[in-house]
Each structure stands twice: as C-alpha cells, then as structure tokens.
View 1 (cartoon, each protein chain N blue to C red):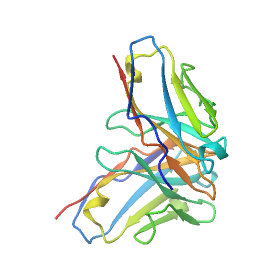
View 2: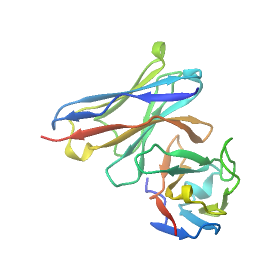
View 3: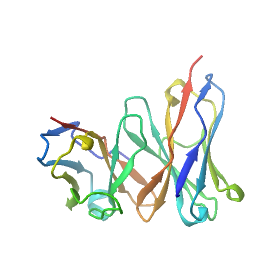
View 4: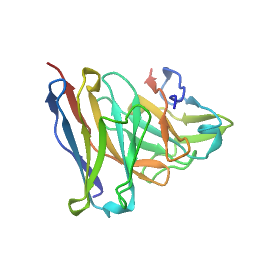
Length: 117
Length: 110
C-alpha cells in the first residue's frame, strides 16, 4: 500500500545535527512533491517547506532557512530532512507528507527529535 | 506567513453538528480554492479529510463537508460520533509554492 515510513526517534545535544529519513513505497516516488511539517510538543502544525522530487529543488518556508536542508535519494525513494546547529526549540515531531494537487494526502508516522543537554 | 486563525475549541453532542472556521487573507484562503482540512488524533499523524475546499478523499465519510466564503473556510462535521473527537487543522495554498496551516481546533464530543 501507499505509505511513508520515517526513521526513529532521535535524542541530540544542542549544536549537533540530525538527519531524518522518509521512505516512500507503493507509488512512483517522483509523482508528487514531498513536504515537511513540524509539530512542537502540545502545539499545532507548521509547514516547513517542500522538495520537488523530480528536480530536487527545495522551497523553504519563512523561519526554516539556513539550518534546514531537504534532500532526496530517488534510487531508494527516500526524502531527507537535515537540521544543523540544533537548539532546544527544535524539539518537535517532524512529519513528511506527500502532496498531490493541493492537499497533503499521505503522511509519515512522524519522527520525534529531542534536543537536550 | 501568519498561521490561519481557527477557534481553539468546539464541541457537540453525539448526532449533532459542529462547524469549525478557518480565517485567512486574500493572499491565502481568499485567493485560492485550495483549502484542505486534517484530522489528528493524539499521538497520531494527521489525516486528510477535505481538499480543494469541499472535496472528500476516498474513504472519508460524507458527514464531513467543507465550504468557503471570502477569506474564511469552514469544516462541518454532521452526525457527530465519538471517534470524531480530535484536533482539526485547516491548510491553504498561499501563493509562490507556499502553504500555511491553521492554529488548530480541538473538537470534543460531549
């Protein structure tokens, strides 16, 4: 079936980096844009941006430039989110979400990233 | 890009209807017919319930409906059931390949 499976929870120290993976299956990976969404503990959803799975061109939302990088490995149908120079306020669940048309129709299960010394 | 405005909470008894609003601007909700709605149960990933203002994906009950007037979109859940208790988020295309989510509404089934 169509699904996105994300990598497991991460515990990192401030200043470190983390790379979250999102593996797609059940559909042609390059059909659809891959988006990233952040949800801080007890907070709402925040759109981080998306990556064009055909060209690899990323688009970052305001507030997610500089330390955040979207990338792909189309050979294994996987999208990645890398966050560098981690801060405590980066503690959140990060979701990948497929976008077809103008709706996010398939979501990964989420990856909890905890930043703590 | 500012988050779309939703009421923090809404409630209704089983069988009743509840309507959630989602207010944006002419640069997002009002400018495009690309509003979608998501249901999120605690500890779970969001689920697409409505896209392009009023279209339902396959498998979503017809108790869920969407509409839009000006800069405000709405989600109505008719015939409330216990399993409808969840957080609901709207989202809109905001131009230039950008999207924005709403602040979220917690729906309680009394």
